[in-house]
Structure formats: structure tokens, C-alpha cells
Image (cartoon, rainbow, N blue to C red):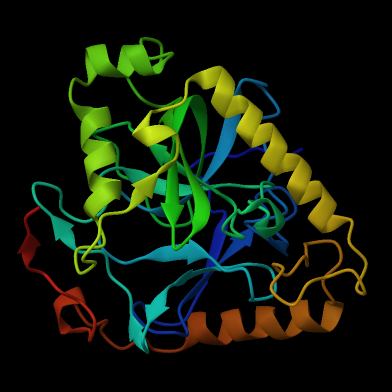
Length: 291
């Protein structure tokens, strides 16, 4: 049985931060086997069918742009690159880095054939006052969503709240968010509209920037889960060159697992050099931007 908890040691780290070699692999807390953040973690909590699993990629108020890889075998979390440099999200006043804890919903896929962005669904956890790390797994309640158009592709942003939040029982809809966190939804829309600070044009939204409610959002998640199932059922001949890799804990080769485990062991035993600070990395921009 899968038992997700953000406190469990459910990850294995390879490489130094802020380098292309830095990868966080999912480690099944039950079997201790290496698996995929994308494919091996269930869509929902096994204890509560109303809760969805969330893979934390980017903790709130941090800048490195981490994401679940579509191309690396077993889909580790990596730092995105842009023009050969490690990618960091700029500080858009008054928000340092990401406006909320950001991640993905496993076993979902925004199918490019349906104008999706070829990624798992993105999800924001609006909880506050909790320290989370990249690669943590938690359960969230779905509240609504915002449809972003990013480089001509549909990129849904699911709004949620963690079951560990002190406000979990009070927040059951976007109306509750407006009451308990006044101004937050407006800020989220502003942030996604402007976070690419060097773009001359603002990002565009579906539905004229209207947030969809919980029921509408659950339909989107269901559709993207079905798309993921179709992806996983594809034969090698049916796979598109841009499709995410579909290796899992159960079907990845034993030689790959053996080699990866040895690399992880060697990295762990090797004397680590002191990691560079963000501001020392080419591509980091610590200034504040105003829109």
C-alpha cells in the first residue's frame, strides 16, 4: 500500500544543486525501490478519495525552477534550463519567487493532441506557514483552477489546500479562499499573468481569466488522468517522439536500476564540496521586478 507523507524519506538525491546533474528520484516508502514521480504515485490518497496526491516541485517563496522531467528515465525532479543556464523564477513584487507551493498531480497528463502542454497537471498549495522541500509528497483538497495559455498551449493551474493546513476544514471552495485569504486569488492571477518579467506581452488566460470552480476542475483532472492512462497504454510503435518516457518502478530494466543505485551510493559516500549559493549561479537574478 502507498502511504504518502511529506515527512517520509521518499526520495534519493544525485548531483549538486544548481547543476544539470542534480536529480531527485522518487523512492517508494513501502518497497524502498526507485520509481517515477510521474507514474508510480497514485492520483488520489488511498485513505480519502477526496484528497489528491501532490508532488512538491517548488516550495513557496523560492526561485529555482524545478520540475518533474519528461525525458529522464524514472522522471526525476530536475532544475529547468533556459539558453544553457539554470532557470530561476524572478521576484515579481511583492512576491519572492513562487507565490505558493507549486508542484504536479501524478498520473495526469495534458495531452498535446488536445492542445495541452505535455506535462502533468500543475497544482498550487495555498497553505501558509509550512516548510516543504522539493520532492515531498502531500495530500491536497481541490478548490478550483485557472487556465493559462503558455506559448500557445493550455496549461492548467489547479488551486488546492493541504490536509496539513490549519485552515483545511474551513476552506472548501474558492469562495472560502476569498473569505479567509482575501486578495490571494487576485494575486495568483496577477502573478501568472506577469511572472515572465522579460516578456513584452502578458500571459493570456482561458475563460477571460475566470477561475473555474471545484466541480469544473475535477472534470479537468479526470480528463487528464484518462489521457495519462492512454499514454501508458501506448505501444512502442504508437509513441510520439515528444511523449514523456513511461518507465516505472515495475518496468524499468534491472540494469538501469542497478547502475542508478550504484551512482546514488557513490554520490552519497563521496565527500561533498560546499554548494554554491543561488546568487553565485549564472542565470540567477535577485532583483525585484514591478508590473
